[in-house]
Every structure is written in C-alpha cells, then in structure tokens.
Image 1 (cartoon, rainbow, N blue to C red):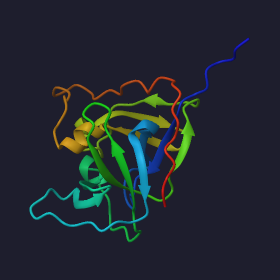
Image 2 (image 1 turned 30 degrees about the horizontal axis):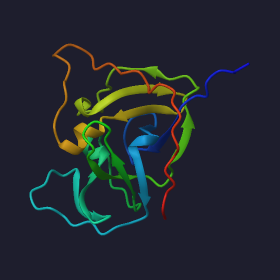
Image 3 (image 1 turned 180 degrees about the vertical axis):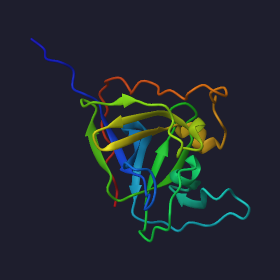
Image 4 (image 1 turned 90 degrees about the horizontal axis):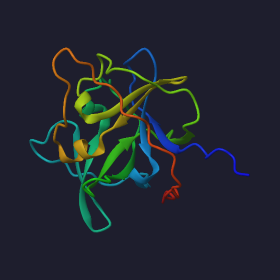
Length: 182
C-alpha cells in the first residue's frame, strides 16, 4: 500500500524590505532553480546598467550578473545595511545563470500548506517578471520568472484592466537539493 505523494519542497527567502507592504514578502524558488549559495563575492559595477543590476561577478570561470530581485520587480525597499548573500540561480527554459541577492534567512518549506493565488498587489510594479503570487500564513510568496529576470526581457503582461493571475505551484516531483558551498 502506498501513501500520498510527499509535498514538493521549495526554497523561500524573505525580501529585504525595511519599509514595504503590510505583510512580509518572500521569494519562492524551486530547488532545481537553485545551484549554489555564496556568502560573498566581489561585484563589479557596470556603468549605465539598470539600478537592479548590481554588477557582474566571476563564478566557476564564468562572468554572470548579480541582480537585486526587489529592484528588478519594482518592490519599494529602504536602506538596508545588512550584507546580502548571493544565490546562483539557473533557468530551466534557456539554461541561463545569474546571481541574486537574498536575505541570509533562507529556508526550505513544504508545499503542503494553504497557498492562495492572488492578483498582483499595487506594490509589485513589475508583475511581468513574476510567475505567481500567493498568500500564505506568513505573508506573500512571490514566484519570480527567472528567465525574464535574467534575460532582462518582459514576458506577457496582462491587458489594461485585467489582473495578473498566478500560475499553479510546481507539481510534485522528486528533486535532490543542491548542497550550499559556504
């Protein structure tokens, strides 16, 4: 006799928002999107790059962009003196890699709880770079469209007057987590 399939596990990282929405915001990543965690790396600024592109860094003999998700999504953030960690992410669709700044309080959660899709809230300016937004007991989960973020391109945006609706959370599948190297 077999039991129910185990719920998928995902990685969540709190958005670095000293002043912002009335409820906490977390970014959601599937485990296959996460390649490695890096405590710090030298980031070289790029002149005239958008403000959410912090610069580039060298990783495994590659030069990859370092991106602020809060800035990329247009989520208002105040001054934050905490040193962010860096997480190497990869896309499944195009095979691109990049680093995103994340809060050190990263954790893995199971998707067996209550997650309700919600339309894009007003504080989320660039909803075209999001695959879904969910309400849960701890606030909001924002599932970032990693391909759109790394390519710097907009994906399909809702027509004026339409709401940006969430896509379903990832289906259950067995995934071995990538161990962080610190």
